[in-house]
Length: 146
Image (tube, rainbow, N blue to C red; front, side, top):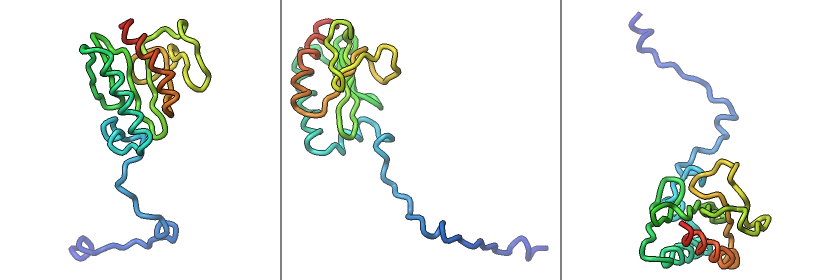
């Protein structure tokens, strides 16, 4: 009886199990916190984020930045813009009524009835410098109206 308790059992590994590559310890992009995502952004997008951040902070002495797990919030008393970091773009949620803005398909959209992280009803995508320049007047309006 004791021999059975101490016996070692072996299992045969199938060819499909043996052919699988080992799991990596690298995190997937969607599993990263915003601070981790900022740390691994590639050059053009990291420069774009820093330009956006500098512009928003320069809007006034009362602007505060808070990094949460999934987004970065910029606020005065309340959030006026929230920024999600994606692998290929920055997604801004502005505290503006989409009814007062000229919505450009592929650049901005009304997200009042769409679930999203952050505060704001207007989503603006930033993929390059031109998009950032288009977003600056909206950022200023959002700051002034908050």
